[in-house]
Length: 153
Image (cartoon, rainbow, N blue to C red; front, side, top):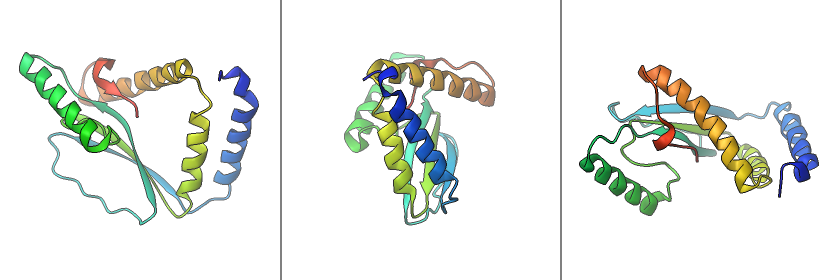
């Protein structure tokens, strides 16, 4: 269904989200950026939490070996976790974590909102977000980043 046809429902969800957020639930949203060369990072989370892959930058594939390694990592990641946690071997990965007893309410609202957009609208939104993310990653790693190997979950 198109954005135009869902305008009332989207506005209702925005109001519901803002209303719930104004109640100051004991939840937090934290982002984590992990680099391939970084030491193993094992943060401790509250018992009630929900994690999501935000984006990845895999890096340049300079040779047939790099391409084969990427495909192998992609296939293993699909088999192991359905890409929920991205592709193994990415140079930079960013994750978001919602923690707190009422996190599930916000997850349900986000899933409902996501279901209102058509595939075309979703691709357009993802493209805009990916462009913004890549701009920041490029600045962080000192150069331009091609959107070819970045993804949004």
